Length: 273
Image (tube, rainbow, N blue to C red; front, side, top):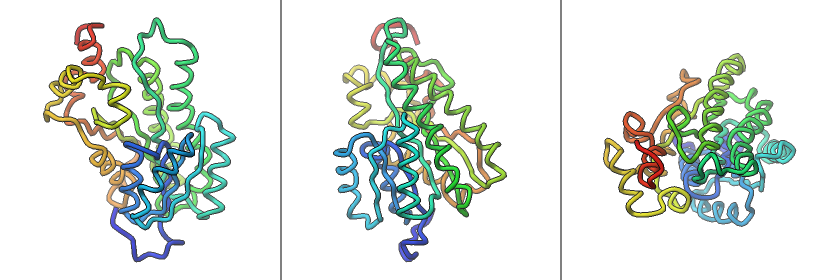
């Protein structure tokens, strides 16, 4: 996408990013602001939303923040109603809201399973469905879903997230075909290992673990949130108008070798990579 700072605010594309308060979501929102978009940030925590909006204030983008639990279709519907009232349009939807933690499948509670599948798979569907009326009248409608390579690789310790992400991959391809007649493009980005506050807390919990994961990446390093945001911007932008139903993996080649969750399992002694 190209900057559109000279375009009147009412004519600027509107991008909705779920889970847009910190980390990867905030990097994606920052990139869309640089691309000249107005922004809608949705997250469960009003405090986190306020922090995200404050960090984006210097971008000059118009920002709407809406506390939303994407697992609740009524809240998602209310979110889109606020988007319609504030901007009268929606051009880009990024389904980035996620939940994840490491747990052996045999010990995972039904509530733990439901929480992650509800955010990742149900939430993505609810947001896509609620956004459809606005996207179908946009001249540049695009959906980008955030998945992960363990959607098609093994994900030991993350059965809930892996299953949900796999569902989102299938949903991405299905909607790409169903909604092509409405000129809505639907793609996905599969980030590889990225260092953020959330991943450091939930996944990369020791230096030994971090090094084991890094060693399995052919390019020899973790990615940055900005690199993932660039891929999202590309798929949502004017240079990708003939791309739909695609999953763009941005992981330094990591998926070509060991899956990241295989490495996690090996490093923690739960199995062999």
